Amino acid sequence: MTSSSAFRRFTLAYGLAFAVFYVVALKRDLALFTVYPSLGVVLLGTHHSQDITAPSMAFLAPAMYWYGWTATAALGALVFGLVAAILPERWTQRVWPDWQWVVPAFAMIACVYLTLPWFRLSPGFAK
Amino acid sequence: MVTALLIVHGLVAVALLGAISHQALASWATVGARPGSFFGRFRSVHAPSFANAVVILYLASALLGGIIYLYFRVDIRPGLEQAGHWQTLGLFDIKEHFVSIGLALLPAYWVCWRRPRPDEPARLRVALTTIIAVIVWWGFLVGHVLNNLRGFES
Image (cartoon, rainbow over all chains, first blue to last red; front, side, top):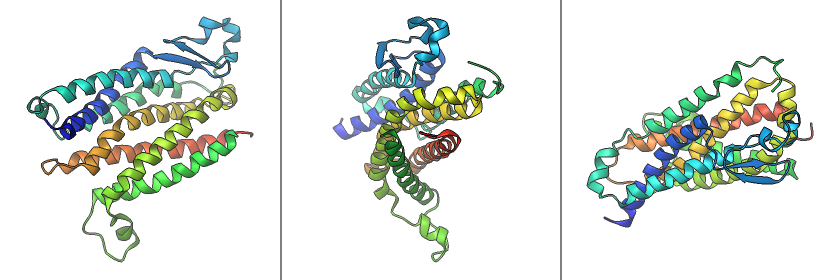
C-alpha cells in the first residue's frame, strides 16, 4: 500500500462521505456548533434563538447553522476517509467504481429538496 | 470593510468561473472543435493545469464568502425576510449547501487531475469537474442576484 494510493482513497471517501453526512446534518439539524454573529457567541451543538432569548426577541440574535453543519459533516467524513485509507486497496477497489460521483450529485438534489419549503412561503409570511 | 471584502469575493469568483469553465469544457470535448472558432479555442486548453488554480480560487472564494456571510446574516437577511424574499433566500440556502459539498470534493478533484492513475476512468474526473462547475456557476449567479436585490450599504 503506497501513501499516494492511501491518500487517493482518503480523498474520494472523504468527498463522498461528506456529501452524505451533510444531508443528514441538514435534515436532522445536527450542527456541531451554532454561531450567533450579532452577539459574537459560538455555542457547542444546535441551539435555536428561542433557547437563549425570549421568543419575541429572537430576531435580535439570529442563529447560523451552516458552519456547524459543515463541521459535523467534515468530522464524520474525516473518520470515514481515514478508515478507507487504512483498508487494503483490494477491498476498496470493489467499493470505488467510476460511479462515485453519483453520491455528491444526489446529495445536491437532496439539499434542493430539503430547501423546497422556502419556496412555498408566501411573501406576506413573517418568520 | 465588508463592501471591500464583497468586491474581492466577486473578483475571485469571476476568476474561478473562468478557470472552471475552461476546464469543464476542455474535459467534456477535447477534440472535434473547429480550430479557428472561439468555442474551439476556449475549450482547447490544457485542462490539468487549471486544477491548482481552481482549488486555490475555490478555497479563497469560500473563505471570503464565509466571512461575509456573518455580516449578511445580521445586516442583510433580516431585511430580505421582512420584505418576503423567501424564494431568494431559498436559492441562497442551496448555494451554501452546494459550496460545502464542493469544498469536500476538492481533494478528490485535485487527485483526479494532478495524480491520475493509468487505469482510472476519465468519467470520474469529468463528473467531479462538472459538479464543481455547476456549484461555481450556481454560487456566482445567486450571489449576483442577491447583491442586486440588496447589497451591503444599500
